[in-house]
Image (tube, rainbow, N blue to C red; front, side):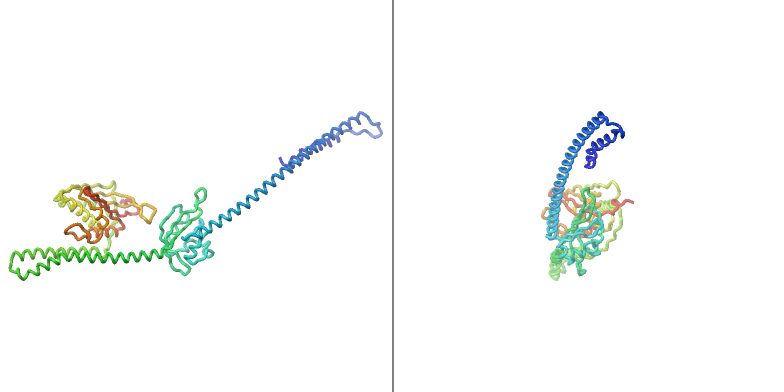
Length: 452
């Protein structure tokens, strides 16, 4: 009940008394005063006065209550005002702390609003680019990055995903490009609605220089290893040929020697020819003829081509096919070369016969630089051979590494390169006395199985 309402209620006895007095009839002029009427009037006056005194006391009581209420409200308002100032001061301290924290970060930080415009830039980002925060605030985020990075940046606005290991190209004040690796995350409100994006990044300039040095060193090491492998592989046949040529003058009239000479020299020349062809296949750039093809049909062609070898080696072959046909974008001749090499290696690993399982299916793999899982066609070659020693697994795809007496060690290296040129993977698992499994993963078309 308001003070005005209380005042009106307290004033009602006054109103009633005045109205009651107004209703009392006054004596007519010239007539004698009626004592009873006068007594009644005094009685009414006394009653009205008592009511007025009661109403006055009630009014004073109500005024005191209102004053007390106002005083309490004033105290509460003063306390609320004091608390508000304390909260504002606490927020100022927190804001200052957060700003210092952000500016103390070693990595660059940029925040945007829901429209992709820059709202925050920390000191590390300013130092890295040479731009002051005042120059880039309210600018679109895309303007801070090179053209090659903008497609990745444009997709961040409104995204709810956390993206890591983004390789971006940041623009400095002079227009130069700074390689950075960044991580993005959405800024959301209390109900999870996106309000903007936060991007943190670190300078990769020194890392890129180190990577280039490592790659250069790796290329030089690989070149040295290749040269040593070529020299080793060529030394044995050349030594054999040289030995026969040295004794040829003394034994040129011996028919048996001439027959042996002809056989061995031709064999070693064929070995050198094979080595030369393998080297050319390994070293020369290849032109890929990638077309969507039926993976199951390719597997059937390889099995049919090697049917005689399976029978002679005593190898039992089983095929596991996909539930639906897989159309794989690939160079059929090159992939067939890889499958032939893997299967021939499996046959050689089972000199006393065994079981060979060939599988074609579909799997999903998440690449290191991506968040999503992509579909791959998976070929598997599983044998029950002797297995590969663990110390040999890491070097299995190195050029000239082989455990065979007559091998060049280039077959798996060439196969590995062919699979990589398809943007795929070649992996191996092996256990001594149990067998070996080769996995060849080739990326499928974006629509999954790529069915006709």
